Image 1 (cartoon, one colour):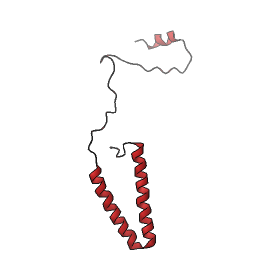
Image 2: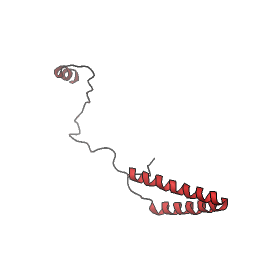
Image 3: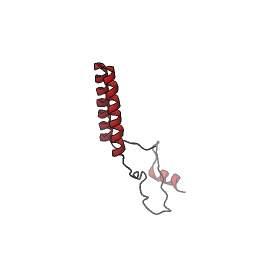
Image 4: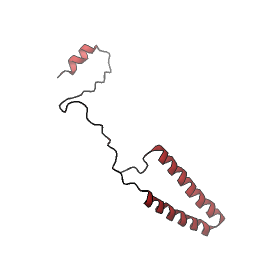
Length: 95
């Protein structure tokens, strides 16, 4: 699933927009129930229209880094929990 919010700034703008959207609907609903419905319909149509115009069709960014080194090169991650000398670690790692 693609994430529609590509950055933290975009997520913050979405949050502010949602707060304004629901706030305007709530204020209009307190004034009059029909006004609340009208504001909901108008804002919803506006948001759908804006979303259709603002959609980006971009290829996703490459998530995996480009391989470094030779294709036949192998790498080993060593996690040493106990204190041992480097020479004994190297002896146990060698294939």
